[in-house]
Length: 384
DNA sequence: TCTGGGGTCCTAGGACCC
DNA sequence: TCTGGGGTCCTAGGACCC
Image 1 (cartoon, rainbow, N blue to C red):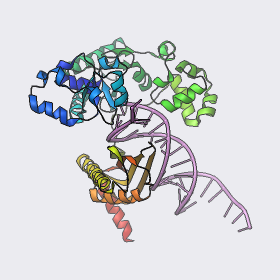
Image 2 (cartoon, chains in turn brown, blue, purple):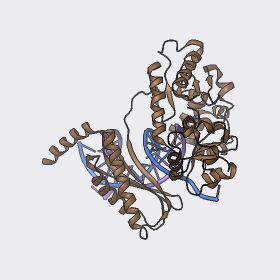
Image 3 (tube, rainbow, N blue to C red):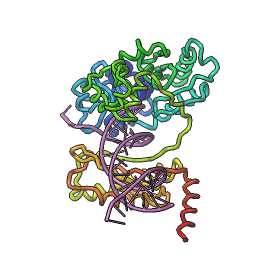
Image 4 (cartoon, rainbow, N blue to C red):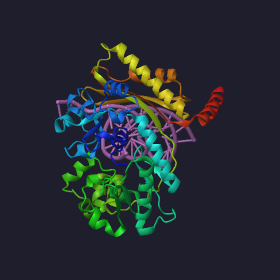
C-alpha cells in the first residue's frame, strides 16, 4: 500500500491532499481537541488548525510521510526533530492503529476474494501467488495486478504498488520500481538490466550492517555481488548468509507464499517521556511494568494464545539493550503470573543506568486449547 | 536533532540427556 | 585418567522487517 497510514488519514482529512503530512509523534490531546470541536465534520477543519511538525517537542519517529513530505527528504523511521528541520511546515497527525487495521483488513479481504493464496506481511504489505488464479498469467500478470488495484481503490480509496515476478525476492524489489500506484513486471531474463544495477541495500534481508560490510569489499550493487564467487561469499559472510547472498544476487528464491502462520511471541513496550531511574523512579516504573504485563495478558487472551517464556527488555539511556527471559512449566496468559516471572527477570539485569524503554514479552506460544491440554499432561507427569 | 513499537529468525554457548 | 557424538532445550544478543 502506498504511504499507507498517511493515505488512510487523507481519507478523513481530504483537505490535506497534496500537502506535506507526517504520521507520528503523539499529541493525542490536540487532535482530540480538533475532533471534539468539529465533531463528525472532520473534512471541514481548516488546514490552519492542524498541528505542525515544527511545534512538536518530544521523542519519537515518523512512521509515514506523504509523497509531498518526502520531497523534503522526510522519511519513515526518521527522528521527529530531524524531520522538523527538513520540513517544519509539515502537518503532523498522531498514529491511529485501530483505523489502519480496519483498512488493512478491508484491502486484504478484497485480495483474498480474487487471489486466495496470500501471505500476510504486516499491516500494509502482502505476497500473492498468481499461479493458479484464472487470468493470472495474462500480459505477464499485468491484467490481474490492474484488477487488484482497481478493486482496492474503488472499495477503499487507497492506492497500492504491485511488483510481479517469478519469486518473492524479485517481486518485492519490483514493487518499489513504480510508486505510487504502479505496476512493474520483472521476468527472469530481466535480472541483469533491472536488478543488478540496484544497490545491495534494496535486497529484502540486507540491512545497514550487512550493507556496510559489503561496501568494505567494494560491493555496492547487486551485480557486483553476483560477480563474487559463491565460495568467496561463504568464506567472508558465513556458510548460511554467504550462500544466501549468492543465491539472492542471482535472483534465486524458492520460498513459497505462506498463507497460514501462528504467532511466536507477543509483546508490549514503551519509551518513557524522560529517562527513568530504577531507584528514584521506582514507583512510576512499577506502574508502567504492571500495565505492560496486563496489556500483554489482554492481547494473549483476546487472540486466544498462552505462552511459557516470559521476558523483559530494557533500553538504557545510552541506547544499549538488555533482555532477560525465563521459561516456566505451564503455559500462561495470566497478568499476575506474567508480572511475577517478569519481575524475577528484572532482578537479573543491571539497573544502574537510566532507562529509556521497558518491554514485556511472552513467547513459546500455543493456541489456548492446545496449551491447556499440554498443561494437563504436564500436571499428570508431575504426579510421578 | 537522537533514534517507536511489534514482530521473526539466526547464532552461539551451556546444560543436560542418551 | 581421560573423555565421543548426537540431540534438545534454554538464554542473550543482534540483524532485519513493516
